[in-house]
Length: 196
Image (cartoon, rainbow, N blue to C red; front, side, top):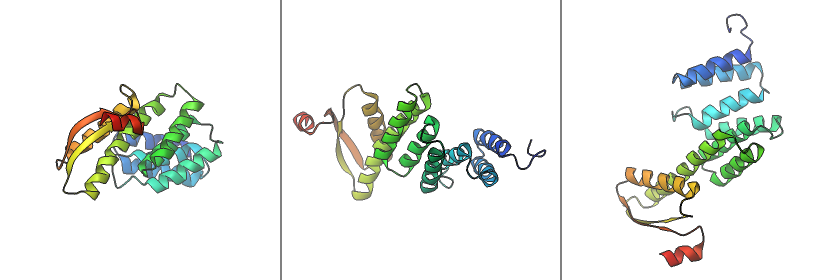
């Protein structure tokens, strides 16, 4: 298709999607960027670029600031009414560690389409990343490590489970820390203090 029409942004986006699925992340981003040169105001192309930059498994391709810029523009061009684009915006915020903004964007994507499965899935991924970032922060501030008491939220709620999964996963990567206990504080200071 590209050979027939080198100015077809949709052809480059299609090939980029295939490349991404095959693990050619650099080639995928390059094709999406060519599509963006052809039509710089196509919200779909901007969303693809933002998604790759926010979620790519390769650190050298991820770029949270560029992802946020492109996701904001895609959302603006669609009047913030495309749940998939708002979901990408949430992923960009999460990549930058702006978890409150990410949560707000995921909530908006789900408000726009309550059955949007991707938003539900990536919300859990983002919450897990948020939990891991808490231990990463401690590892920077306390490189010598120590004992940790995990104060959780509401028992049995997926938000609490995802955050806890991230905390425990990152603690396993940092053996200088040991989680010595875990209590449910119901996201309330009084309850947490009593539980401790």
